[in-house]
Length: 278
Image (cartoon, rainbow, N blue to C red; front, side, top):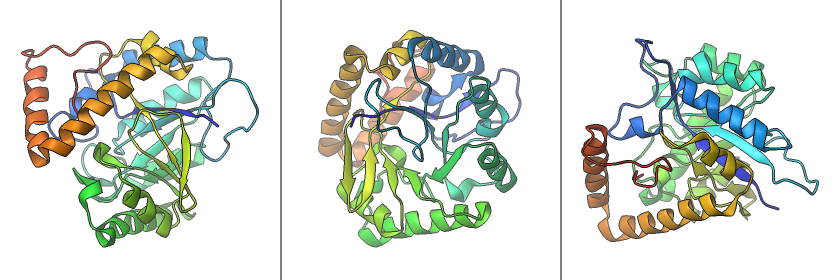
């Protein structure tokens, strides 16, 4: 079975003085403006015959590949903006929360997390601390990140949390093995892929990342399974993977330099977002 997952982050409302989501270098690349995000949802709704589903209810019937919408980091825009826009279409999303930041400026509070779940959205772990290179953690560190974050969210919601997404784009099999140990049943990576695979009973799903400036028709084309934009992301992902292996920690410094220049207008970032580094 093939599944398409789109990986969004935060949505910025112009004029809103409250920040949303992470302030780390390059985080702005993933923050769509409210009108931009609304255009994405409209284009996806017009392009697809079926609506997005959640990891709890993935249909097994033949036809158009199931689509899942995910939102990383746990920025407050999940509650203030994103959920409202999704619900206008009758859709529900997956909100992955970095638990160390719950209730801090720009991030959802415990009360907002509960409200999102009551409205039918799925809440999952995005680790505790959002490590830059999670795949380089020891097995004990990985289990700690997943176990603590899952416990915090489960205690807040009063139900067991068993979905998660990998922060930072650094995935390895050990990351999934550790997730399985603590009871995570579905784990989303940032690898642009539609294939489904199991690691120790944990379903691992890839995602296509949506960047600021990505045209709505491009997002809709990915959401419908069009090959060209998916292949473009995959090829660039492979290029970045090579850079990560060769560059190690230096890759992060080079990436941050590039995206900082991009924000200052010194480097072009095209509408597909493929000049952005993660």
